[in-house]
Length: 610
Image (cartoon, rainbow, N blue to C red; front, top):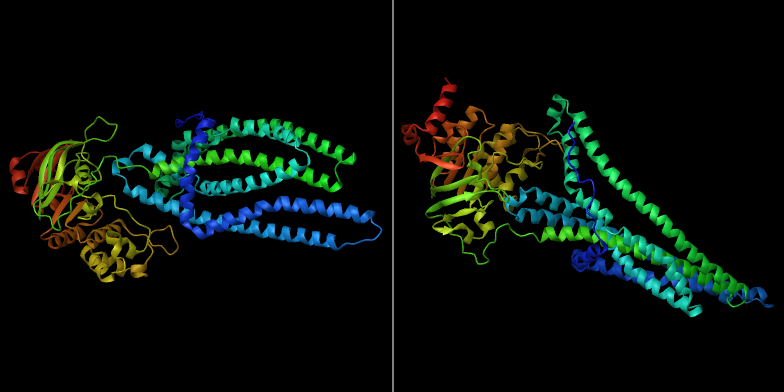
C-alpha cells in the first residue's frame, strides 16, 4: 500500500518565537470581554479574592497552633480566642470553595460563549475570501490551524487569569516568608530553577509537532470521513475499500503517534531529573526550619506557617512557569487564529465603490480576459472577448475542461481575471462592491449544495432574508416544480432533509435538483445562471422545467451551460469554447451552417437518439 508523505520531524519553535506570540493575548482578552463583559469581570473579581485566601488561611492556622500550645501550658484555660480563630478558618475554607466554584462556572460559561463566537467568525471569514483562496491547499492548512485548539483557546483564557491570580498568591506568601527568614528565598529560587530550565527546553515543541503535521491531520480527518460516511458508503462496500482506508488511516496515525511518544518521553525524562533537584532544595529548606524550631527560634505555629508557605510558594512558582510555557504554546495557536481572521482578498480592491445600477442597461462585456490559478503558469482561459447583452439568453457549449464554469466564476467575481477586464454597462466590475454586485445573480450550480436542513430552509437559502415570507417560498417552489416534491413529504415545508438527523428524509437526484432550482427562483435576480441545471431530471421533467424557465426569465439576462443541445437551442446565442478559448459564437442556425465544432457535437448527440 502506498504510504502518504509525511513530515517526520517537526520544525522546532524556539522560546523567543513562543514568547513573541504573546503579543496576541491583549486582542484575545478584548474578544473574551466582548462576549460577556459582566461574566468576565465577575470571574476576575473571584480570582482576586481567591488569591488572597491562601496566605490568610496559613496565617490563621499558625495562630490556632500557637494558641493551642499557649492554652496547653496555661493553668486557666480561656478558649474564646481559639474558637474565634477556628470559626475564621472555617469561614475562609467555605469562602475559598465558593470562589473556586464560581471561577469554574464562569470559566465554563465564558469558554462556551467564546467557542461559539470563534466558530461564527471563522465561518464568516471563510465566506469573505475569494474562491481562488478557498481552493488553495495552503488555505486549508491555515483553516485547520485556526480551527484547532478551540477548546485550547478557552484553556488559555483560564491559564492567563490563573497566572494573575497566582502572582497575588506568590507575592503575599513571599511577604510572610521574608518576615521570618529572608534568606529562605535563595533556597526557593534554587528549587524552581530546574523547572524553568525544563520549560524553556521544551517550549513550543507540541505546537511545532502539530503545525508540521497540519496537512496530515487534514488527511486523517478526510480518511475518517471517507471510511464512515453515508456519502461514500456505497462505493466503500462495493469495492471493498474499508480495509484499505482503515490501514491507511492507521499507518498515518502511527507515524504521528511515534513522534508524539518520542516528545512525551523526552519531556517526562527531563522533567523527572529536574524535579529531583528542585525537591532536594525544598527539603533542605524544610530541614533548616525544623532545626530553627527545635532551637526555640521559631514556634510550632511558625513551623507550620513557614513550611506550608514555602511548599505553596514552590508549587505555585513551578505551576507559574509550567503554565507560562503552556500559555506561550497556546498563544501560537492564537497567532494562527488571528492571522486567519486578518487574511485579505487575494486581489486588492479599491476602497471607493460606485453605486450599482438598479437595472442592467447594456449588459456585460469580457475584454481580452484571461485567468490562471495562483502559482500556476497554465492559463485556464485566455483572450476571451464576448458580450452578454441585457435581456439576452446566452449558452456556453464545449467539452469538459473547455473553461465554461471558469467563465461563470469570473462573471460572478468568485475569481478576478489575471489579465483583461469585465465590464458592466461599460464600467469595470471591480469598481463595484463585490457583495452588492453578486446580488444581481441567481445561480444553480451543477454541484449545488444539498443542505441537510428543512425544505423551507433549503429553498429560502436563495434569499435568506425572506425565510419568513411563505408566499414567496411557495412561488419559488411552483416555478421549479419543487411543489410536487413538497406535497409528497410528510412534514411539508418543515420536513428535515438528509439522513444525518432524526426523521430526515433523503431525496432523489432529480428532487434535489428541483429544490436547487427553487433556490435560484427565490431570488429576484437580474441575471440567472444555470450550470447543468437539469442533469438529474428525466426528459419530460427537463422539457417542462426549461419551458418554464424561458417564460419566467422573459426580459431577464440568463447564462446556460448544458451538454444537452435540445436545451441550448432555446438560447438567443450560443458560445462554443475549446481549450479555454472562444471558438465560435452565434445562433443555433448560424453555428450549424458554420459546420465546425458545434455542428460536429450536435450531430454526434443527435445520432445517439436515432
